[in-house]
Image (cartoon, rainbow over all chains, first blue to last red; front, side, top):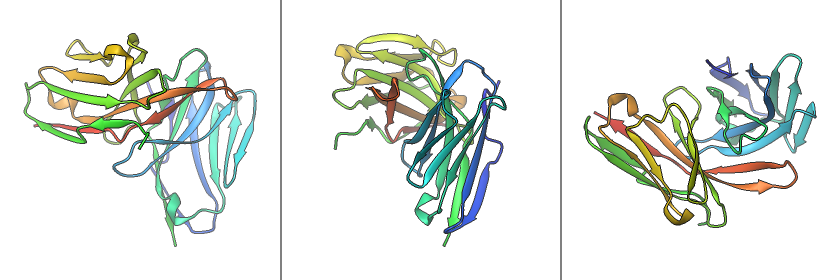
Length: 113
Length: 117
């Protein structure tokens, strides 16, 4: 069963506009959530994370929002830049999982100049 | 370069052959993970090591798969009698404890792309 789902396989955005990537999860044991970014021929790189005790975390142009009651999180990128074009993975971790992450399927973001 | 290094980057093999991949983690990291990513999916956890001890194995890791981390440094992942369904990107990661989050922060290598013909 897919415990972490990213229902949009792709997203296309104009440079300078907002990109919103969504993620849903089903496992109530997840208490830490992460976003990774992946360029072709490279491994995923950590972008931003949020603990379940928060509902928002911001780092520069990137903000992650968590809605625990809906089991939903989203990543906002403002303003979007062409260099942001990549595959974005949502991941979740349960307490004491020690780095055992459950990933979504990924969303391909394309930012057009 | 002090990142996670994986070798080879690409491996093409025939069904039934054995293959071995190597991962060199970031030197001060004592946890090492193997993940597998198939086309259109996110990475899936396979196994992890704390130093040389293999502490958890996913049900995805059939008995044809074996991973080792002798002396707690580099790790190898061997697949015996490869099948076409083994075709995937095999990702290695190492981690460091992040005091602020109270979590392990994973750093991934670029992966080994396996194609089984």
